Length: 76
Ligand code: FES
Image (cartoon, rainbow, N blue to C red; front, side, top):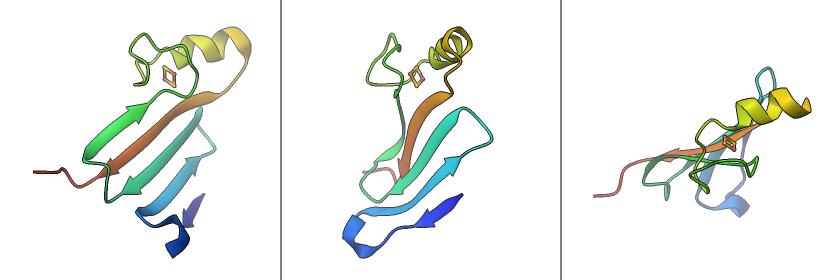
């Protein structure tokens, strides 16, 4: 599923939801400054960044949460 965002979302170009995987949300933003992977399960040892702990969380709970991935051009 891919949704083009309106100008109201300003600096966000696109948002993708990968419904066939643990819920991973990918967002392109002109302000991202490269690629960043943010935890949405609250189990990461490197919070606010994802360290993959969501995989164990999903197995233990039956949930299907995954990270928010924000990418955009690197800032100089
Ligand atoms: Fe929380 Fe990956 S560790 S989403």
